[in-house]
Length: 178
Image 1 (cartoon, one colour):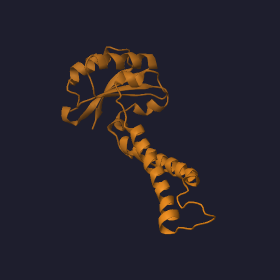
Image 2 (cartoon, helix red, strand yellow):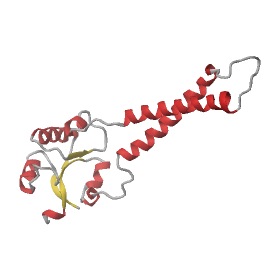
Image 3 (cartoon, helix red, strand yellow):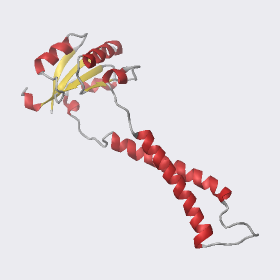
């Protein structure tokens, strides 16, 4: 396959232990653009491939605080500024009555922010990915484990990277076209 039309190299493994060992070794060799695919969670795999910190919790916190503040100030604006009613001599800004709606608005906006931020940070929707063209990649959702090293990695050399991947207990290594 022409080097220009290559997405990366994909190694297939029979069990999660071989995948985990290969991911750690490849990461120790200096490769940074790699990803692992597994039909089940593998403990330690995300650390082995070097997943980064995500900003999702910060986005959810900001969304929750903004929702709570918006809910509180909406109630304040309605009851104290826009349509004030003096009932029983109670103060117009009766903030203890605002607590349930403030909490609910915070939870609502935080959950909406979580869903939208997760979709955006994951790059979804992604109707096409080059790995879908790999001949045996459909087995990643059944009983096989895969490790892909992308061509954009600075250390990527087709021959040396293939030799490195074949040095593990693989079922095979294939080229993934773009």
